[in-house]
Image (cartoon, rainbow, N blue to C red; front, side, top):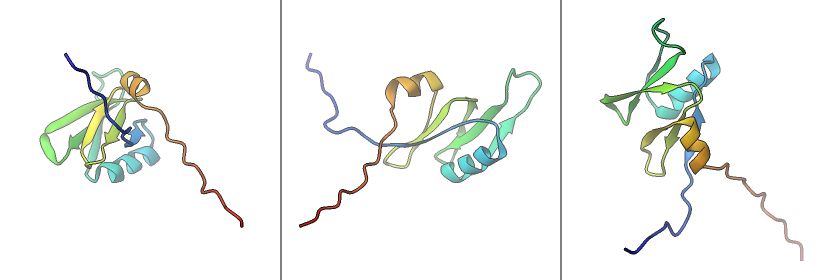
Length: 101
């Protein structure tokens, strides 16, 4: 069976969930919607709840350290910390080179 790979790597934007007021504000702006954190005593740690792509049915619990990824088409995805580290690496922006004549 033939195998295929992407011709060009895809760049995504991503934010990691941690339970701080600053990060929660950033995450709310990043997803463009209201987010909530469940501090239920039944859970071992706080869990972020996000509506993905405006769909209330896809409210996904996200544990601390997990990532929210925004693809190039604007869709949001939940990626566990382990999977994110396996699949993604930081993009290093190169400064434009100055050419002199």
